[in-house]
Length: 67
Image (cartoon, rainbow, N blue to C red):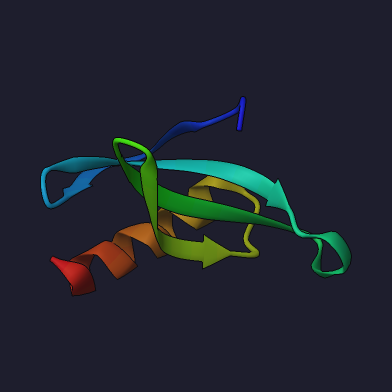
């Protein structure tokens, strides 16, 4: 997870959302959005949209439903 970035400026439960690209074998690559809490990560969103702008747009729509 060396390429972890801030996924969006919006927060969930006061925590920042981070994202990174992950290769999941035969399925291909995906981007995931998650928060961290000590040694735990909570994944909120997984997308096959690899373009950052598309991923962020989709993530922001999900965050509106969560908050």
